[in-house]
Image (cartoon, rainbow, N blue to C red; front, top):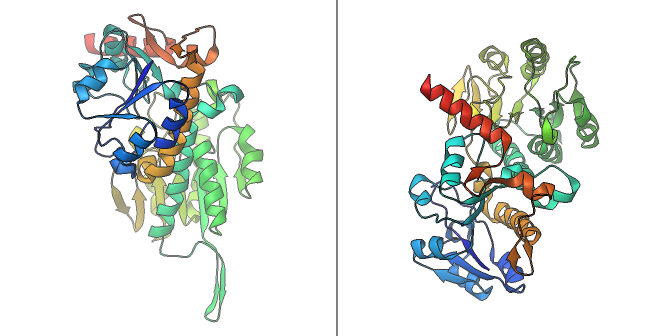
Length: 383
């Protein structure tokens, strides 16, 4: 079995799918591993480190893509890379299958077996493979550091000869993995933290981290498959916004993390809310790439609105490429070990992890939600 690790072409992507330590462990299992030359240069992993770990460094991109059995990436392939995927190839990476269903159809048409790291089930058995969670944790941590650097105030309470400084007040919207890491990091920096989520089940987790949970009573199910937040009714959105507005107004920092897979991020912070914040306050919108939780945010930009800095970062995990790569490599290595039996690929679709993660196989799209997304795309084009 020959495993290939491709270099990312997206200029913002500095992470790698496997680090040298992970390759050393996989090589001991008899796997032949090829890595593209320059693979880890943006994450500070030299080609020589990969060679010492037992990998073969390949400078010919086309050779690598054509000759390996399984290809590992971080981001989904770009259009020119699709042509390099030959029938029977296995591709494992983040694919954003619900966000780019046409790409999934192209992979199916190319007879590629594609496994999407976003679709790893949120179960205890698959926890060590859950790359979406590991990378969300990185984003939540970095979001707080960005806010702390921009905020013209201290985060902790300080008692000095010049007087007592009150701690900053941080309001985190969305208590998933990114939100919980943001809470923990803000608390470590000494801030007073509040958090909001439409899912009542996360209350104990928020409180265990030392934050106050801001709770809204909604008369509908707010949890979707996999534990994610479900898209809620317009009435529930209005009630949530009213509660959020009260806490946004008094916060020094607002960090928004609320996302719904395959859909535009819910709009939770309006222009009016931002305008009511104190000048110098900061909003970091982790959902900016999906349309934003904040009406003011723009993906990849810092916007100053009524004296408030609204930051819409793109791909924060890539900004911490060393540890983000280490965590992703662990996730993908564990998945590989789960897929392989006696050195050969074993796609057992009775297994919930394999069945849930595999998007395309045998020329067909397997995932029902992706099929529905493709149908919607076709319907929109024909209409």
